[in-house]
Every structure is written in C-alpha cells, then in structure tokens.
Length: 597
View 1 (cartoon, rainbow, N blue to C red):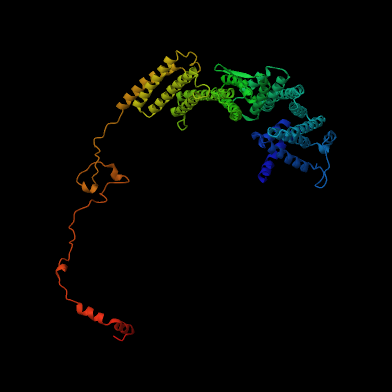
View 2 (cartoon, helix red, strand yellow):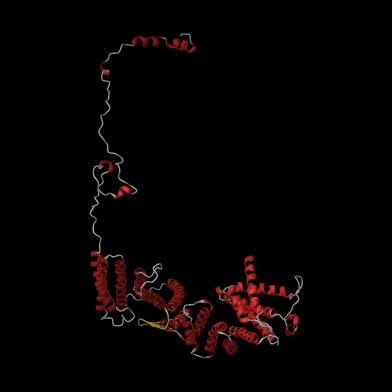
C-alpha cells in the first residue's frame, strides 16, 4: 500500500500539468486523463477493482487539497460542485471538474467489476445497473458544470461525449437498443469532430475511442434488425489483428451473444451421411459460428492474425466438447439404469466424434500453416548470425503433431466401419509422412550425413508415388493437402545437389599425416627406446607404468613338520597319580585348611 501511495505521488504532478493546461478559461482534458489513469492503475490487465481503489484515493486527495471535505469524521455533510461556484474566482480551478469526473469513474469501474463477477453470481447484475446509473448521473453533472461560460469549448465537447458514452452503456445493459444506438452515435460523432480539429498526435486518442464504441453500435444495430451487423462484427474482429486486450475481448463477447440469438433456429447437423440433432446450446452456438471462423481464417492478412484465430477456434471447440462430454456421462448413467445395450453409436456420441474431428483437423491446419511459415523463413538467407533461425528439426516436430492428430482421427467412434473415411485419413498420413521424411533428410544434410539423407530422399519419393497411385480412387481427398508433385520435383533437385556436395566433401577431405598414430597399450616405462606419437601421454590418464603390477614367482617359505613325536617314549607317571588318590577325603579337607602344606 505504501508503494502504491509513492507511485501515486509521482503521477499526480504529471496529471495536474494536463489539468492546468488552459490559461484563458477552465479546461480539462477528460479523455486523456481517464485513459492515462486506466492504463496506469489496473485496466491494462482488466483489474477494475484496483482502478476503483485508485479513484477513491484520488478523490480523497483532491478534497483534502481543495479544502472541499464532506464534513468530518463524526458527521457527514454533503457538498456538491455547482455552476455558481465555478463562476466565482475563488473556485476557478479545473480540479473541481476533476472531482466530479473521478466520482463518475469510480462508479463506472465498480459497475465493470460487478459485470465480471455477475457471470457466476447473477444477483450482482442489479447492483451493476445501479452503479452504471450512478456513473451516468455524475456524467450529467459534469456536463452541466461545463456549461459554465468559464469552461472552454473543447472541455464542453468532451464532457458531452463522456456523458453520452455512460448513458449509452446504461441503455446497452438494459437492452434498450435504439436509445443505446443514439447515445453511442452521438459520442462517436463528437469524438470524430474533435479528431478532425486537432493534430494527428491528439487525434489518435479520439480515434481509439471511436473504435471501442463501434462494436457496441454494430451489436445494437443487429438487435434492432440489421442482418449485416454480424458480418461487420466479424470484419472488425479480423481487422483487430493479433492484438488482444479489452477491444478483442469485447468483440468476442458481442459475437458470442449474437450467435446465441441465431442458435435458437438451429436444430440438427449433417456429417458423413448421418443427420444428428443438436440439443446443447453451446454446441449450437459453436457450429453456427464455425463457417464464419473458417472464413475469417482464410481472409486473415498475416500469420499472427491467423494464429490468433486458430487458437480462438480451438478454445471454443474444447469448451464445446467438454459440454457434450458432460451430457454423455448423464446418458451413460441412464443407459445403465434401463439396462439398454445397443451396438449402434448414439446421436450424442456421434456429435462428440464430429466435434473431435473439427478440433483435430483444426490442429492439423494450424500446424500446416505454421510449417509453411517456417519453410519460407528457412529459405531466406540468415543475416544475423547470433540470432537462432528456424531449423528442419522445428518442422519435424510440427509434422509429428500432425501425424499424431491424424492417428487419433482414425480411432473416432462411429467411423470404424466408414472405409472411405479411413482411406482418406490413411492417404493424408502418407502425404504428411513424406514431408516429415523430407525434413529429416534436410537435417541430415546439415550435418553432412550424405548416405542417410540419400536413403531418406528415396523414402520420400516412395511415399509420394504411393500417394499419387492411391489418389486416383479418392478424387477429393487431396484438395486440402500440400501438392505432392512439387515435393517430388524438390526432392529430385535436392538429390543432385546432395550428390555434388558429397563428391566435393570427399575431395576436400584433409590428407592423412605422415606420422602414423600407432595405438599401443605398452606402458611408457617398457618402451623408452622406441618413439611413436601417443596423445594420451599429455592427457588426464597417461599410460606410464602398469598398475597394479603383475604377479611374479618367488621362493616359498619352508614348512616344518614334527615327525619324531610319534616315536618318543615318555617316562611312566603312575606313582604320582596313586599318591594323589590315597589322600581321599581327609587329604582333601587338609588341603582346604592348609594342614598338608
């Protein structure tokens, strides 16, 4: 919190320079101030709560600086800025206008925070509408204050545009489309006029505001009855390019809402000769927008836009598959209870297979698009040697993912008996195997493994000819695939180039040195009289002596055996043994008490 205050302390003087820009009258650059504040305090990341806290702290600082406090800590006394106050020289400070602007921004940011939370808690929508109305009310107060003759014309126009924007947001949330359109159009007109009246640097900000408002105007027009508005929204998303942010999120949300209204008329879909009813709303919305998404991808101006559209389509497809998977679990439980057992794939399972097919084929097309981009970069000369450029290994990884996706396609439920589908998938796998094999050969060429590369080029030609022979029976299977004939032509050219490079490489090979390197494991101490080059002598483990040394024969220590013991006759000891026996008990007792000693 302390660091936040320090940052605010650094920002305030910069803002106040903008606020005090007018010399002849009271002026306030409304749009510039709110845009800078939003970007610096959370809205760059969509954090409306942080921005609301900033507005509250800014209001407290302004009231304290201007001496315009609402009572004290014990009692609240409401104070409002009026037109009469601005006419007085004592209050001829544009910070009084800024006070009302910050109140409107605080209410608006709270409403946007509640809008994010209302996705999971619908009751917060009522609080959201209340805050939006409050923001519009503060905007009307600001516009009324700017009617003072001391306020310059630019500030009056910006206040009118700001108030129109807030009232349009209120009408938009209340679904009053006609009134919302009128408010947004008024806001758009004012900003366009302001953009034409100032320099290009200042006009950029006004044009950005107009672009933010345009999707709302198109959506309102669609709800009023303009059928071309949906196409205009798609074109706006396409022109947004690879950038994300609030503009892209707003466009996606509006397009989803528009499709949800159209999805009510969709009831079934046909694929592979089978008609399947679609009862899940999420699946209807996705299938309805599938054609538009594919058309947008085809019309994409650059690779970044195309990549972003592919990712959006895949994310929508995954969410739809998850919704269908939940319904499949419910259906499986119902079948267990009713003990139904049928060999035919259910409609819901077939719909799941269809959506999985769309996801996997989209992955294939996305990776193929990335492969084309890398191929183009691979052929370009590399200018910066320090920068790592694309390599054939990168393309091999992409084609591995494509082959993995095609392998999953052949295992989809409900298509095991569809022989035409299985043949098409097998043919596509052959095409991508040929391209994968081609780039593996290219990677071997880079490390000068000529024989391995030549064998792989032959394998590529084998795959390509096999594709051409099988494609005769399947007419439409190669229309979405890379051209195999171009690959054959390129492989033939690479083969000749490889053979020439291999011949030049053998001719440029360095001659063997005159001094032969003899590999000898004899230690140095045993071959001191002979010299030959041995690099190991200056290495970490030089062969100087043999360690441990070999065993050598030595004379053994003599062993002595006592052979005479068995032939020695010892003197008899019987007399001594009998004397010990005669003592008996008496001798034993004497021995104990020491009498016999």
